[in-house]
Length: 461
Image (tube, rainbow, N blue to C red; front, side, top):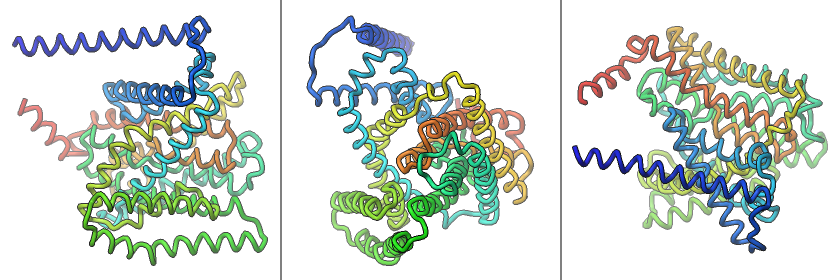
């Protein structure tokens, strides 16, 4: 009893200490922002290290808060990045924001974030599993409905909002297809985390949604490759040559490099050296795709897809890389997104806010209706089909990556980028609560395996 009391008391004291420290830091930040504190000149390395420390602390603290509120931690990390940008910190304390994120620091943060995202996309490609999925017809219908309907609706919406959202100089068809694709993606890593948290990863609906999200990821990145190639091409000989180079590069990867990678994995004498080979290969291939006009993130993803499957050593390497990438490098990407996105771009213009609400409504309705309708056609009960549609509406990190590619490629402007970021945040935040609400209604009939697990858990307490 005394140990328990000490534990509770220690936990309370720990929370009080953290709250007091946060209050002190907030007070110093407020004073700093009003120029009441003058620390004099600081060398660039110190500023960079301070910026990294602030980003990691803010993102992970908010991630833990979201986790305690029943949301995926990545949502808090995304919000942490947004709060450090012009939408919050830049508005409340412009002096601190300018001091903490000067141009030279932003350049270095962006480079680290791009490196982290290259590694993340490589790991995402390695984790892509569709071959052993059950019920391929159901998966195909969910992917077709969950991606086809948002792409078509997003294409029409993009044409209607073209003067407001299109990047300067972007071809209209490529821009419209990109916006439709951005509304059609599902965040596979975030969805997997939500399913585990809700104990639905072994249920029928959870397995179907996860398999469909994996298949949809593959389709989305291949489609994005085509869109990016089309965005930089016209009707001249150089454009045809560029498209041929892109296709040849992909063919070389899967026809030549994939067998080489399989042989290297089989004969690897040192796990450490295999880590080096795979990471160097992913980064080098990302650089090569950038050189020929494709985005490096796409190259890293394709290289990950080419890595051999069902290899215990590769799975261990992926697990090792995920720790550092997800904990250190990915929050820097979220901060980069937050620094590039600004809710202030919506401003006081009712038209911009209506456009954001319209994009959000189209993204949500078409995704839930399309994926849910596909599941219904595959024979699932209506409630299960709706649950699949709600799960597939989770966009998370994947839409942030796609939106960042669109902004860097000039397909959308900063307002379009901000709207896509906000859409990713809102649709991710609504996923878990909606699934919980549906589960409360008919958990027994829809997911007997999950119900059995919960009953076993309760009786063992």
